[in-house]
Image (cartoon, rainbow over all chains, first blue to last red; front, side):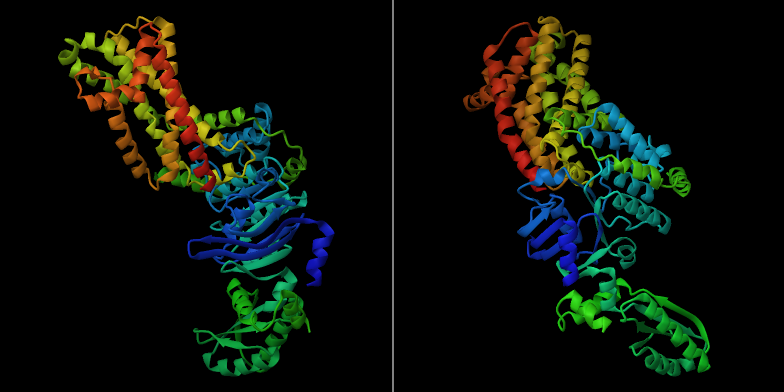
Length: 342
Length: 285
């Protein structure tokens, strides 16, 4: 709890919401979301499909009116002062937010004109952006003929025609190949390095881990955990050790050994030579790696032949399972972290 | 199709890298120009409409082939029976058929709005700090261009078939100008339906249901004097009758003040009623 307060008082808040609600008929898509996003950082909103991420972003970007609660962007109310919010934010939606029938240049020039740039300034800025995004060659082609990675680029380029104070990126890498995904990450880092706050929604823990300094985990329209990456991971455990043995009959022995060394639950996989153990809970990745290497050494000493051994980050599934399991017992995120650190 | 796919894949593989340095330079510029005026924002959206015509020129079919068909078909179909000969009939018919065709073409606005509004780009437009009706006005500015093309095409066909406007250039320009102004206001009905209805087909269905009776039950084809009384009451007070009479008069070199006033009054009323409804629906989408 103390950490959250510190972040709030130091840098000022880009986004602050209290009890934000949006219902569609019977469905409470967003069910009382409280967020405090410090300015100048990447804030990750992590959750599965249908968790309410996009709906939350749409309310913050003035596209949807909340049915309850309040939201402020740089101190401006998103409903009563929508225009003040609009002049400071940009949105890159989950589906291409550019006109597919127009070319790359035409899209950027149109938006630059709508932002009040003169004709010559619009063309100049568009050319510079296309150049920086490696799209000069595709500038004259209709966006519908762009590849997925190119669309994402033109989309983000359109969002930073005027350097926004707050950029919403709604699942910016869903459906991209790993290379394009890395390039989008580079762009996000460059944008935040210049002082823009980024609110990033994602389904991938990996992505939030790479980019975000604080993360909110959303499920069924509610924030089920919030904190820094360290806090969040500590609450889940640093990850899992995946072991593949050469002989299936050695598995019971390996299972006993891992239980003893790691002091954690061991799962037997459907594959008769594979088993998985949760490691960490010590609060940082290094301890988990130490634990894992100790376990490997123990297995070798016991004469168990290991074909493959890997230490993986907790998957989003594991984060959810851990968070939803633990939630009834203990209250806040920082309590979870303290508990784990102890 | 297969060639296109291959090219795209090859190109994406060779896609130039993102230059984070030049990106950083671009981002340093934090100055923001003042918000554009309502008019220049609408013009920018009008430019978007024209670019779409440029990329898909086939969509001009409805403002070229359709109007030609209307003029030729009705002139020869009714000409002999109603006025004795097609060339005599076209003097009476051309301004009216022009009104009918252009008013019918307005329904494509609703279809365009309906197919466009669900696309992601509208989310971006809605997060821009611009005059709210600008995207809708932009559509209609682009459509005004289409109405002008349709009018000129029909005028050209009419002139070839023997139509001679006594109002000369000024009368013709005023007549077409009034028609386009009215159609601009009338289109707000379709922007409303475009936002209200869930599919393109239903927009089309509703449009036809409104437009067919409205344009046919007028004085475009025949004088209302032989119609039954109740129908005369409708026809004589229909905005389309007023507009057709005004355009016909202007192009013939007269100044039908009452019908011009009625047409402008209807245009103002349609704009005042359907403009705000459209904007309310647009804000809620």
